[in-house]
Length: 157
Image (cartoon, rainbow, N blue to C red; front, side):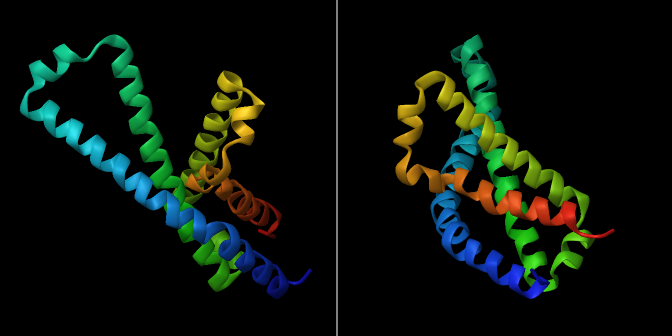
């Protein structure tokens, strides 16, 4: 398949999978970011009260929540930027993209796969199958993200 046809196929992936996922996940991540900032402000204003309310399990849960929000934002942003590079310049654009974008994309993919694995291990296949529209909160972007990684790995150096 030539470069032009590959870019058209990827553009369809972006339209069918990417844009609905962005439309659902960006507001969700913004809400998560607001929660993280609100908790950080509360800790900054009343550190002793906030630390007294936190128990050992809460600290781990809060750290996991912050990691999920940060990984989601990094993964979405990297996918958006790298998609723009590919659609504008083809494989040459992917080769010239900064390594930080690739690391952020890989971090986002790993985050999504870990969340899906946790759901599978804790709740089983039935809950994973009942995911419905929640697939558009990030897991659906694994397909175009892996396509970008594949294209980058297959491009001549």
